[in-house]
Length: 304
Image (cartoon, rainbow, N blue to C red; front, side, top):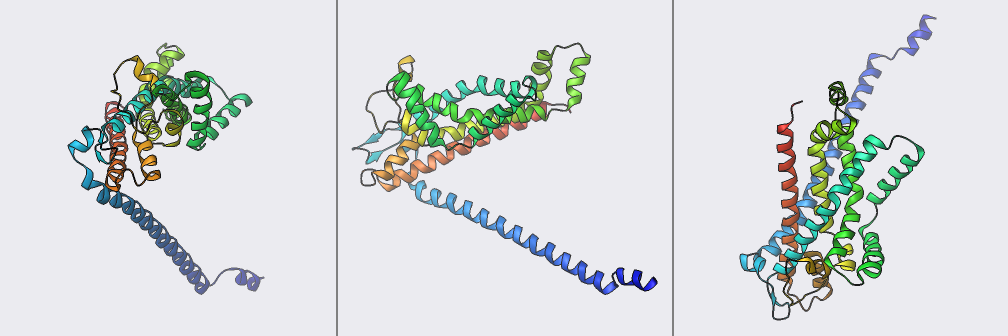
C-alpha cells in the first residue's frame, strides 16, 4: 500500500521539471506577447511616420485656409475641411439625443424579455456592419426617396445611422457601470425613477457617454463610403452660405477628396493628396484628444 502511494506522489525531480516547463512556457508566452506588441507599435508608427513625412511639405496656413486652384492642381483644401467639420457637427446634433436616450431605454426601461434581447442583438450586429452598407442605405432612403439628390443633410443622417448603434451600446454600458448604491441612495431620498436617472445615473455615466459619443462621431465623419453615396461633391465653385439652404447642397469633404484624388491621380498632385491625408488624421486626433479631456474633467467632478 505504501509503495502504491509512493508511486503516485511525484518526486522532487519531477516537480522541479514540471516547474521548469511552466516557467519556460510562461516566459515564451511573455516573449510572444511582447513581440506582438512591438510589431503592432511598429506598424502604427510606420503608418503615422509615412503620412507625416509625405504630408508635412504641403502643410501651411494657406493650404488649410484656401480653396483649390488651377483645376485642383494647386491651392488648399479649405472647402473639404469645412465640409468634414459640418458633417461631423450635423451628425453629432442628430445622434446625441437619439443615441443617449436609446442607451437609457435599454439600460433602465427595456427589461430582459426576448424581444429586448433580440433588439440588443440587432444593435450589436448593426455596430459591426461595414460603412458601405450604410452608404447604400442612405443613397436608397435619404437621397433617392427623400431629398432626391446628394446633400449635407442626407450625409449627416447617414453618418448618424452609422454612429447610432455604437453610441447606444456605449451609453448602455456606461449606465450599467454606475454603482447600484448610487441608485439606492437616490431612491431612499424619495426621487422618482426619472429623477434618479437624470440627477444621479447620467452625471455618473457622463465620462463614458461623452467618450463614446465623440469618438463615434469623429470616426463616422472620417468614413468615405457613406459620404461618397450621399453628400460628396468633388469640387464646387459655389460659395457656401451658412443658412438652411446649406443643408440641401452637397459638400466637398476630406474622405471624398482623398478617394477621388487617388482615382484621378493625374489631376491632383501627390503632395496635396498626402497633405489631405495628414489633415484628416490630425482632425481625428484632435477629436480623440477632446474626448480624453472631456472625460478627464468629468471624472474630476465626480465624488466616488
